[in-house]
Image 1 (cartoon, rainbow, N blue to C red):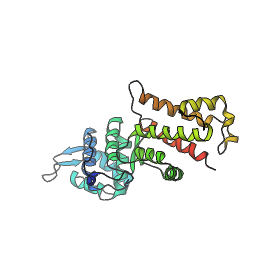
Image 2: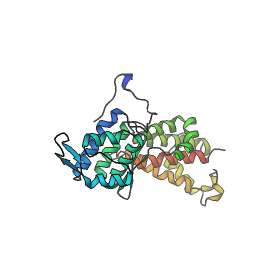
Image 3: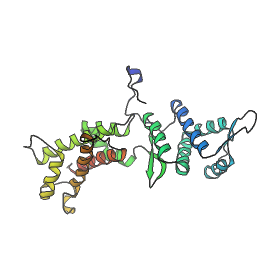
Image 4: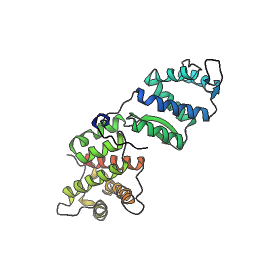
Length: 266
């Protein structure tokens, strides 16, 4: 489902990411947790006359050991305990993903978190899932100067890491920046800048490249050859079936763009 606000009251600041789990996230997250645990057979029915749904010992005992806390058994008390502390909530979601997550329910959780402006994101590695920071502190610090000085990079960043990510715009804005940036440095007379054309030119004549540490790289175009994939990703979007870039592709293009910019700063 999609939603485009028609008034400013529901137009949220794209820069606001939160590590907390406010009330508006709790209902969708509660439904997600219940469906996943129920699917895996960890939810029981009829524990007591006042507790119609409960969490079975098959998971409760593990939670006691790993978290070193005593979790309530009744479902209502259980989920209230989860959301009572934001750190507990984040770690519980990570635990659920690590033990029961697959591509389908991981994608559903990521949709909730990304649209809800969460500072957490779902991380996949070899078909295993967990929770991690949407933007690591290291990446954010390395990117800060580029974001402050370049509107296109800043726009690409906001589309990548904020509410309602738009990975198409991440790739297009990054590519637009690279075309003008590289033209101004290496091809000032070119009136029709094209990223792939520039990359091919660097492959033919890498000696023209000058950036921090370029004397340590052989050939120098190893850096700019990374941009060939950025051009390919954009091309796959704009031609043929118009495939939408994935999250990983968008992050690759954005962070490669920032790397190229950083290495060209004196």
